[in-house]
Structures are given as structure tokens and as C-alpha cells.
Length: 340
Image 1 (cartoon, helix red, strand yellow):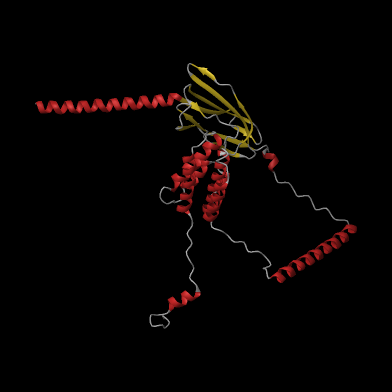
Image 2 (cartoon, one colour):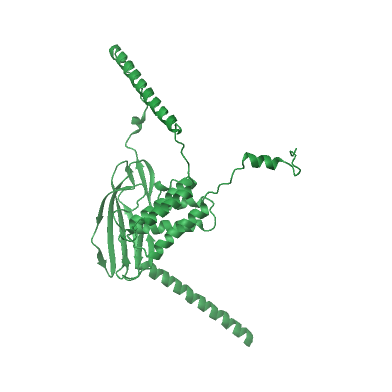
């Protein structure tokens, strides 16, 4: 009887411990979410091509938190920023409310997405450990200005006849231009033959990883970091990685947002943790470019090293081609006779 009582008391104590942990986790989650909140909205979600809409970003945060203010060069996907307004912050019961208005437009039709807007925040003014909170994406539909009746195919107008007195002049002028072109080509050909050079230069296609490594070395030789130009440094570092993705995997990375680039990379079978390396570099680049975050030297060094590792892990390996001599030697039997 005593043994059963002790067993029940142990189970009861375990249940109480688990309940306390759950209550604590819920409380911490609620406390974290109550410190900062971000929301985004537009005044119109269906527009015609070229219309301007207002994209409003509202950030509510505890007055003890420090946030990196969004700048005028925000990444809003396919939308072009026409104007930018920052309202004076207000305080409501210890909560700071900040509002940013972007006047944006797009010059294409279809369905577009304003990507999530990242905002970095710190626990205090002296803290270097940051976290990122993002707004929800917003769908925008852009319609054409043309009506259905304007899209009907109309008959092509007949070509205008050239007057007979101008026809001869055009033919003579064309003949003279052709003769001049032939003379220039003959002189060019003679000079090339005299120097022993080929008539047309052959373009050498270099591997994508060689180009990327060369661009990385050129970037590191520049004085961006010493001059405090962190934004320019990470713009070029991000472009190097995006150019490599285009040349290596034929992803239109230069035209896509970071979210779209990462989705494209997920569709590729990459070795080891290559995806996480690229994601960390691109996320840090966005934070520096759009959130005005100033990285530490160790973060800069890590971003460069992760870029090198990602390129090395995903580069295209070339197999050496057998020469004619090697093929003939492989075709012989051990006694030196042709292997039939």
C-alpha cells in the first residue's frame, strides 16, 4: 500500500513539474511577442499599371528596446519606391509607435508580392546581439490600362511606295556603303594576317567558381571596411554570390528578392549544409543594406568565409578528357596487340 502511494505521489509531482514548465514557456513567449510588433498595409491592393500606392509600415515596441529604423532604400520586390515619409514616433502607455510610409509603383501587369519587411531590434542601446522580426507579405494585383475592345487585332496598313526618283539614289548609296564595308574588312583582314593573329577572337568561357573567387579577392582589396562603408561592402558581396548562382545554376538571382533566391536554391540538390551558408550570408547582407546594421569584424570575416565555402562545395568539377594517345594505349591488350 505504501509502495503504491509513493508511486502515485511521484507521478503527481512529475505532472506538476511539466505544468509549471508549460506555463513558463507560454509566459516567455507572450512576453517576447509583447515587446515588439510589426504590421504592414497598403491603401489599395488592386491597381492599374503605373498607379501609385502607399505602403505603410507600423512598428510598436517597448520604449527600452532599440530598433534599426528602415531607410528609403527598402527592398519591396518588384515595386519602385517613389517617395518616403517617416512620422514622428508617439508613445502610448510605455509603447513607442513608429510609422513609415512608402509611395511605390510598378510598371508591369500581373500578381506581385511585397516581401516580408525585416526589422532588427536590440535589447538595449549597448547590446550587439540583435533579433529580426518581419512583417507579413502583401499581395498586389496590377491590371492593364487597355480595355478588351482595345486588344482587337487591326489590319496592317499597306506599305508606302518609294517614289521612282528616290529609288535609284537609295540603290547607289547602298552600293557605296557596301563597297566601303568591303574595303574596311579587307584592310582589317590583311593586318590580322600580317600579325599572325586569328581573324576573330575566341571567347574563353571561364568556370563560375573561378570568376566568383576572383571577385571576392578584388572586393577584399578595397578599403570599404576601413572606411566604414559596410553597406557598399555587403552590396558587392551579395552581388558576387548572386552572380555565381546565375552562372552556376542558371537562377535569375539578380532579379529576385532574397526570399525568392532561397526558394530557388531549395529546389537544387546541394551538398552538406550549403543552403544554410548561403542563407546566412544573404540575410546578413539584407540586414546591413536595408536595416542600417553595422556588423562586427568577426561577422564580416564569417560572411566572406561562408561565401568561399558555399562556392567550393557547389562548384562544377570538370573531368579530364582522354587524349587520342591514351585511347589507343587503352585499346591494346597486355601483350601489345590490339584488343579485339
